[in-house]
Image (tube, rainbow, N blue to C red; front, side, top):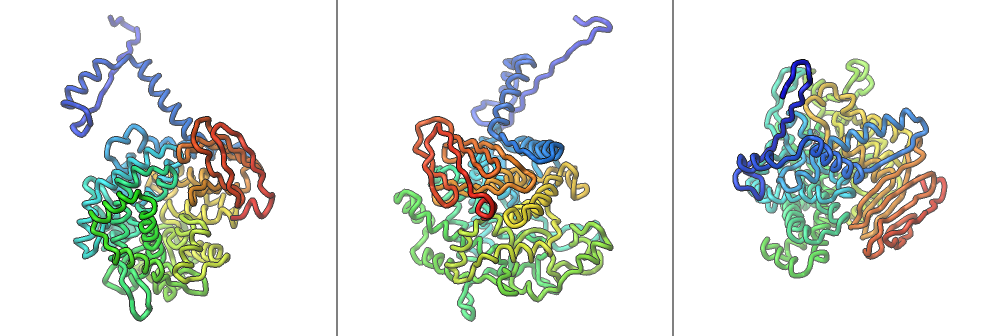
Length: 567
Ligand code: IFM
């Protein structure tokens, strides 16, 4: 009983059920039953802590920085990012048919819509808890029919996923947006970012590389991949005069360029990133014939009515897609980019300070970024973020285009100078592509990417929700970029390249059922694997493949200097 001046503790326990939950009779009844059987708070707290302890173990990551304060700050932010990502998606919602919204579950921005930002998020989960990626890919699979409808309505074959997706997977992108600087409502062409389809295909492929989950591929992944490939095969048009295929009227990831200057129509022709991603998707779809069990391949191609002639067209596109270049080996962001004017970066920085939202600044002046060689975010450079130079070499060779050693640094240098980082995704990509060529700048850009939400770097956007792509992207920079992890031809390759101020990096990953702990100190990589009776893991270091048995501990000494530091 209560007594005057004596504190009283009240415990209130809630159970939330909805009619969408599985294995329930009626939500109210289930909630009543659950609250009746719920243990007192100390026990609830104990199990809550247990689950978080287990999650932290799965996402373990540590580093040593030459400066202890910097080390503390960096780790704190990285762990904050992991925490927020696990608040947005974790084992708890695997069974719930929920996607991963670009701004988490933290705010109103983009109204919870799902974009291509998954591309930056899934790699972190693939190597930690791939079950989460699988659930998020199945979320896309459930919306495949809607994507088929969208392709058909646009006059294409296959599946055309929307740029912004939500409940039933229809296109949710706005058709008008407001420029707060000018107060004007403007036509919005962002739904033309068809590269979202390649991002979904890439995510399926990466998940499969990390897990070798053949059941997923056979029953969900392959169907999506084939339908996306079919869409690329149908949107690509053969241009006789050029003897090459083209993709017209789309937008690349850079949202400053949504149309040709003075054009009423939205979209650009031959966005290099989109064209190459389309080719890459087609190559993967063709490879499915040797990955899937023959019976499943036959079932799927029959169900989808994929004829030999269609596969031959895909092969032809892989050899003859057009990619624009200018100034020698500079991959043009899109056809006609070369004719745009150079932008006066210094002048605008002097006048406006922060030029991240150059689109708004220029529109308010009655101008448009469409006229300039100025990008909001990485576009061409996305290619170097997603693929190794070996992979790009193969892609370009088959197309009959040169891809030389200088292509990567020359393009990085060219576009870096012409990008405002108006999206938080941009710094993640730039830090990545600089990591092997300019370790100091890479670290600085990485630190800027870390500030995206803790400092609300864009001035007012964090209160509308976290930026999941930047959060996961920074963790993934540590996880895959600094370690040089690459999943290629069934081998897990390691090629560490620590940023200048880091002395040591430790993390734990999962790869095709193996649990590995990695420690990189100076020029030594220590790999330890959890015991078990799996077949040895093919691990590639320095051009050589080693078979690592479960329960072993092995050191690899890398050659100091150039070999260790360079790709
Ligand atoms: O998907 C991104 C896009 O690349 C840049 N604008 C914001 C979107 C949602 O995060």
